[in-house]
Image 1: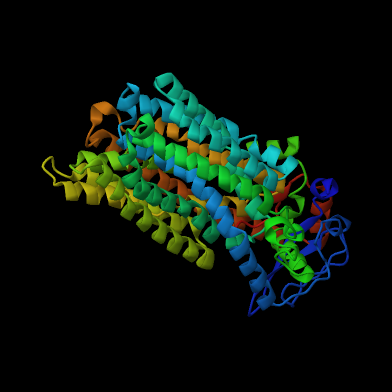
Image 2: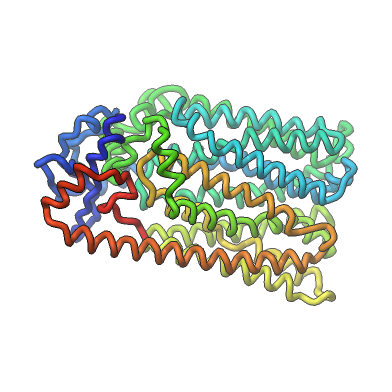
Length: 535
């Protein structure tokens, strides 16, 4: 497999038939080059590909067969993946709800202390996301995911042991360290099961489950916070205890349920017959590799060359900056939504219950927009919907008069929090435009790091001195949304112009020039002249 990475002998070619878009593999230095006109068929005499478990270079299949395979993955793998993401996001939302249940006052500090904990969480989380995919590629994401879940489960229920600010900071740092690797590892895992044009919708579900977790946390908080005083524990401690135990259960199941790949679904809780027939398993493997050749390198360890390719790719850096700036605005409203509703004049338990419409509304619209993005492309333009939506919400929060009613404040805060998430489809957008696989794995860890590092400045946007309406913080969020809109548009224009430039230059080369380029170029993956970016 290392030869596949080093020689860069393979590229993608596309045949646009009347019925289907067919991606096939072609060996540049081979005389046997072909483009299939049969759905799912390809010719290749590549030794490296033959060594991949389940890959069949002669395999042909119908569109109905592939649809059935994809549906099996959707029903057998994706729901459990969403469950693991659910328990991850329960802690994050539980923290926000715990703040509204006077966590800071119970432990003897102010909301500025909470902001400092969020800052520390973001820094530690980011630091631990970067090496995660190195470990995942070494031992397998299917092993690494339940190990991480078991680790943060312990720290979650350990919240019942804290009694002052130092112990609070300790558990927040530890939970950041244990949770950090989960999302990068899961993203890498999902890319081995789904084709590029299938990922945005699935990742929208993946991030959308955060809204479900948030709504569920608000719902159960309504009852659990009433346990304050039982066994000498505050209501928010009961919330973390129950969440930690539930996470332990899901982590145990993950150890015996997540398969290594499509060829390894038999046994344990997956059943003696597994998920697929032998033919379906081969289709599951082969279709993903034919869609994106760089995924043939999924089991190859990350190299120094991959690191260097990622570091010097300015398009990758644009994706990271977009994530850092654009998601920063979610930190203040996400952290203080229950508190804003409470301070508007609602009881604590009611305030947590009233967060549900924002989370569920955001989920529905996020899924609809991601589905449209998968179907029609133009990810950047679809992402602008969420940016503009959230900006309008922050404008409303800032513009409301001092004598606004509690329902007006609730409405403005709900609209802001309900803005559709573009994070999942943005990751799919970035992933589709990065190769080889090692570079992509690094980028997946980096973008999750960027999405959490924004919590450092984001945690300081809503300051105690600016409470309870946070006019200065709302203005900062409006400006950040304007910058994010510019970044999305500029990246989209850059990809389009680069494609046009490469197409013109490639088409202007003779066959001999192209052959010479393939033999001598030092360009790798998405830096190659014959690589085209997905818009």
